[in-house]
Amino acid sequence: MTPLDRGGGCPGPVGWKVKNMKETIVLGLLLALMMTKKNPRKFGQMTLNLAGQALEYLKSDPKGILRSACRVEWMNKHHAASLGWSLPPWVLPQNDDDRAQFRGSDRVQDVAIVHDIDPAVLPLLVHQSSALAGLDEVLASAQEDGALVEDDGKRLLLDMGEGHLKVRFIRNTKAGKFARFIVRRED
Picture 1: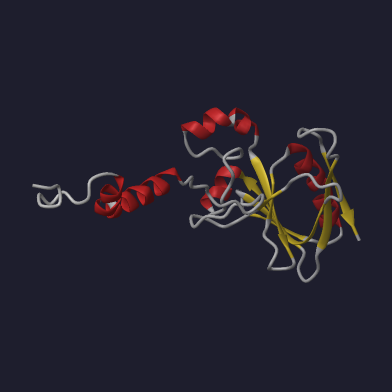
Picture 2: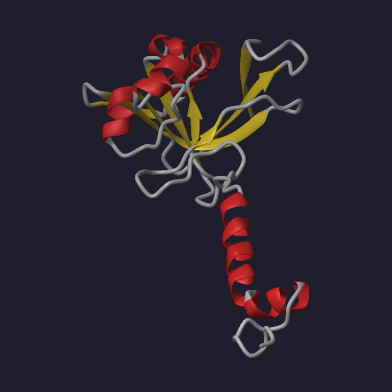
C-alpha cells in the first residue's frame, strides 16, 4: 500500500504545502493583523474628539501666533470643561494616569479661549501664565477702547462687536519650553 492509497497525499514538502495552504494563509493573515501597530490619529496641536468642542493649543512659533479675535472668553478650566470645551490633560487631567503624568496641572486654573473672526480657524486655548498675563493687558486696553465685557460670575466675555482685535503671541523658540510669551496688540 502506498501513501496515496491511504489518503495521505504526496509524501514530502510538496504534499504538505498543498494540503495546508488554506491554514497557512489564514495563520499568516492573523499574524500580520496582530503585528500591526495601531497609532491614534494626530492632527497637530489641537483637540479633536467627539466629546467636546475642538481647540487649537498655543505653541511656539518663530513668527508668533496671530489671531484676529472677535471674542475672548476667560474662565476657570473646570467651567470651560462644563461648557463642552475639550481641554488637554496637562491643563485638566481626566484620570489618575493623567494626574501622575502632569503633576503641575493644578497650577493652571484660568484659561482663555480666543475666537477668531474667521469661523474656519479653530478657537485658540491660552493657558500659560505668561500668555494670560500679556493677554490680560491687551484686553484691558481693548476694553478702554470700547470693547464690551460681560461678566456672569463664572466667565468674562470680551466681545469686539463688528470689529476684531489682532493679537500676536510670541515666544523665543530657542529659550526652551518654559520661555515666557510676549503678547502684543497689532493694528
